[in-house]
Length: 156
Length: 388
Image (cartoon, rainbow over all chains, first blue to last red; front, side, top):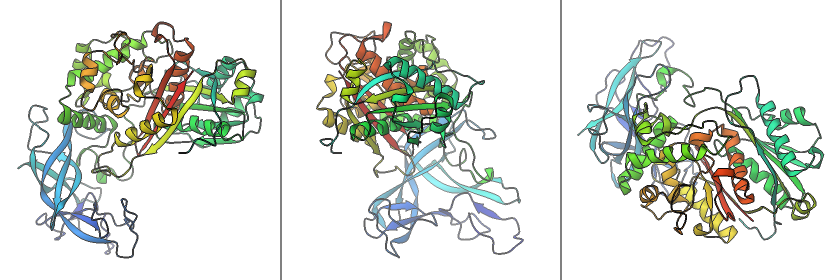
């Protein structure tokens, strides 16, 4: 979660996960997914402020990772259509695992968990291998009135 | 792992309570009943037991001690074990090592869970507005295993009907298991038309939640002979975690760690898949069972669908076919139930009963070797092979 240095921030946009970056806090424009790339083995992880070591090669130097931006474009690896979830979660929704590329490194891919929107929640309509494009959307508000922003994919 | 410095370990007593819902009990009183059943089965006393490993996922702390406060506080060393759905198997493995090491002659493994009518596992932790579930994909179990099934479909063309048939088979098997939580026949249409939980898993393709307990006493060969037990040997014990594979941090990989654990188990035991007479594997969802046919080398990669179509894992299938190896004669998690901590020890019970010829109407003829498999997300995989 982003940190508020002001004690009373005006309601604004807040990303739901650390690896969703909005360069302009007041706009969805230019939002992207952020990754950390291990300098030793080149594996890319979804950004987390606490990732210190590489989960693949145990690389543990002070500056083990470089910041990378993930591509908006991806391909659906698998999906499911969820009809029963925890209380308060609207269903049905299409949940997927989407492979996206990494800007500046054509060999790396990262799997992102996200909803697939803009398509009926019907196995005849969603397909594995579908090409999709990601975007940031504000889907609901938090208790302070901020808009919570998620990353979603829609058919490209 | 190296096993040459371990001595042989034998299962001397097993017992489990019928899985179900027992709101008037608690995890200690459920576990204590299983312990008594295992002791009685083996003809031994609690005072014979020198070490205990107790598995319970949601109430791990002091579960072993709470059970001893029910059955007898003998002061023995207790390990309280949690490893997600591989909890019971991990407890069993601790007991195995206790005896295999030579440090103890008789050890007890007990697994227990009380889940009631809990429904979906997990839940929102922290501020619900910042929970990604439902707005950024799904991490619920039916969803994860639904996706794992579709992964198999995309690679091998497995159909929803083939996944659903697993539920039909396991519910049918359970008709011969009075300890199963459910003893209800379901047709393929029943399964396909049941309420969808997470595509392609309908309600009957999801294991139920409930309460249960199972226990097993393991011992050295000398002790097994002393107690007059048929010699049921733990021929292999393997435990793995998920190695890094593509996507694993976002989409759990239940396959690689199972492949690895199975290989280690076959290696340790010197057996091949065709030597197994039955397998109790982790059918938490109908889609999961299909994956494990291949992961455990029961079917060649890509052929699990055909194995289902030809009933090669069905008790009612072609017994003369050398590939026939019944899977989940107990009814599996789908029908027998999945009180998480108990499952890994219940598997051992079923394989032991099969080996001893005590499986009643679900008996596999000439049963000489069986495999028990569990997985826990996060992740862990345990595979044991028992032989006689």
